[in-house]
Image (tube, rainbow, N blue to C red; front, side, top):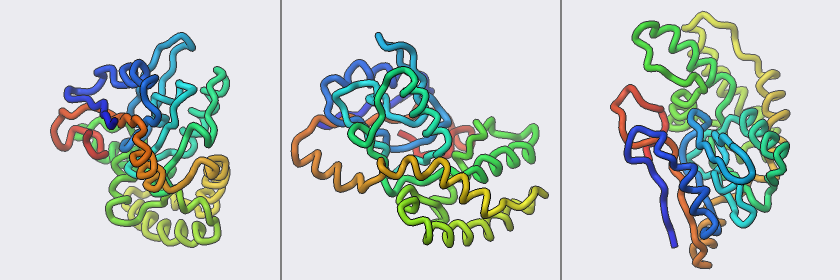
Length: 238
């Protein structure tokens, strides 16, 4: 069985709570879009949890949780989210969390670009969360994104980040900010990316197999369907 929990209003409809309530009947919970710009709050017998990136099914011992191709992942935020759950006794391991090798990494310079653009817009700003969501999706669509699978080979990743930074620094120079250093970005990727490598795999292959095995799969959307351009998140709508 394939099911989806989506918000058809303005957000804050209780999607995370519904996923938690229903997930006991599902084998796989999939987050397929979005980043850490919004949260799903779940309150259960284990406590109160605010999940920005992890699928809400992570609180269940019986489900496999998938972070899909369409997600944009702030590595630093995800590591902190995993640690916060571990501190409360919630297991997060490659056995219950799979991260797509094609998901895009939200880099520190995406957050910086978001902040600088909001400042430039001043009283015309959109009200961004300033977590880099619009900039990272823009880079994804113009084929300048860094993907989770790139973490599997740091030699080629170095060259890729170097090329992207030459272009990104040229763009950011319009905001009169200091250049982003390659060394700092590689250190960030090593610190927060390497611990996540065991979770990274080909999600498409896993999902095709799960469907063939007739597993019960729930897709968990982020945010609601309403709001009008440009006053909305930069991610694909549910």
